[in-house]
Figure 1 (spheres, helix red, strand yellow):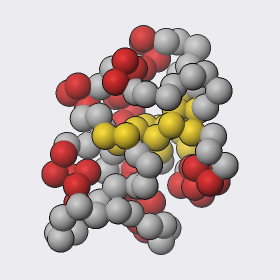
Figure 2 (figure 1 turned 90 degrees about the vertical axis):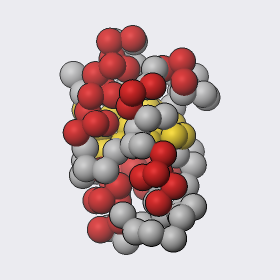
Figure 3 (figure 1 turned 60 degrees about the vertical axis):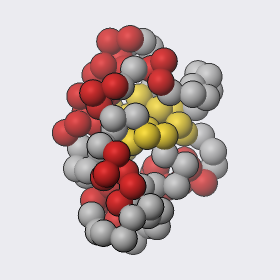
Length: 111
């Protein structure tokens, strides 16, 4: 079963270094705006083998734009490792931005 996490909880986990965050959006979306520290791994290439630093002591949070692609990636992760603590970010990066949390931008366009 895929669990969800809200942006405030994710922010807390990131501040405490308790999470590995994976962004499964496409490269142009990631470059446009991404959460600092997020590992970019597009959904089409997603595999737990692509997620570094996953040592079992940190939670895995996966996000996309609004939550649909990340939910799919969470299911793929659980197929690979049913005992992994994996969470889908509710509302994706749109919810993160709406809460006023910062994003890094590699391009000049907007989300």
